[in-house]
Image (cartoon, rainbow, N blue to C red; front, side, top):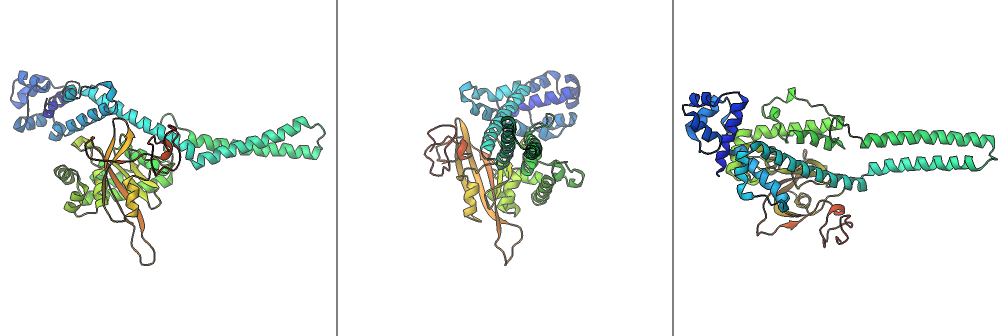
Length: 428
């Protein structure tokens, strides 16, 4: 079944939303109700003037009825099937399923994305528990206070001949240590606590900003329209607000250099190649990569992951996609092109990589490291690297093996491994 036929389901959904009868819509565009019924059930092709007339009668943009969003839905369904090949999904009937059951199709893709996100979060939290210095410090303070209180209390209980002055001193020590314990416990609870009405709380200013951007799909329509002054999201910390303000300023500049409609058309025409797009719009390669990561999937563009890091390799911005997420609280796998770019400033890198994930985890990565900020004769430039990540299907071409971080990577025989994996005993 051609992808175009899915347009019928969208026409039917829009008509029902408007509480319009089938006969009324058919009369408005000059066709019979029976013919419209065939269109709505994806049994007739549609295009040209009739499609434009239907969009006008339904009071909706033509793009909302055409195949861009359909391609994205089909890609998401195929990706969901690839993540669980044992389920035996009939890939040859993907288009038929999406056309007949668009609501169920949307549910399947959302649940597949949620499962992937939760799996990635579990891996990150597992790694965080093992490496997070703040968590380790808080736990150490709690254990130290408890040990001190227990030692002092045992002296008071077992020794009946304690001098009164020493007894008062021990009581004062217990009191002071109990205050430290209470303070350390509150700090630990505050650090770990996630309000039930806010979902998973951001764990750092950078993660807080990414949580906000992820909720928007990293696409900010109000900045596309130049209305930044009227949209100032409330974030918990001043640090997060500062980071977001810097991101919005960069985003606005990218919008001015690469307007959405023109850039979207060019991206499709040039196969989403960041180098070709940078040349066409006269911008840096890093800017073209950032802009690709903000293209909405509803326009038929693939989902792009994005990662940025400073010269120390610390992740400063990340857009995760299914299968791709670099840890923040521990060192990432050094084999990613993002980090290779830091040792080759201004040299573009394009490389296919493969994660140790059954049935998926293959990506095409574009990366480059460039100076950040203004140049000066008195100081060395500060470098930052950016990497664009696009999922690709397996092919005969070779792909470089990469992981997430050593502690949760199951790949064996890696010469870059820093420490043994907790996932198996063979990863060395």
